[in-house]
Length: 122
Image (cartoon, rainbow, N blue to C red; front, side, top):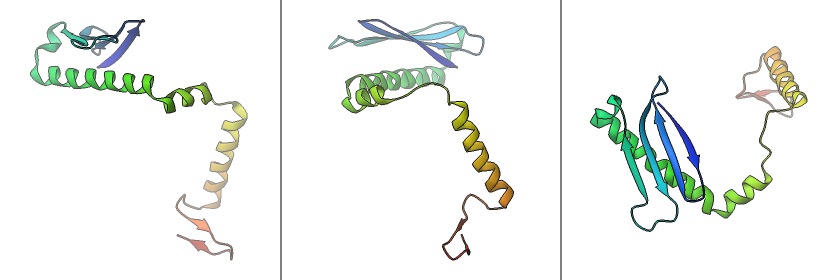
């Protein structure tokens, strides 16, 4: 199962989809509410199991907690301002592949390091 989300100024909507992309549950959180901050609607025959319902409730509340934490934390705010999302540039990718290839060719395991005297230290 996967979760998709949609948000606007007042609500966050999280929809749980099964492997066929059919909705199983919808969790709507009211951002400005002081009580009754969220509603969970179970949809379809996949939501009849008690274990599935428990998992959906726990995951929905965890998503809400993470979203509230991300939107109210100053560290997250400055991290988002400084972050550079996107794909890795080709020159960075080729440099890291070259280093891995050199280590692999030398026969050193990642846990081994060469000391200053030239002896292998594990």
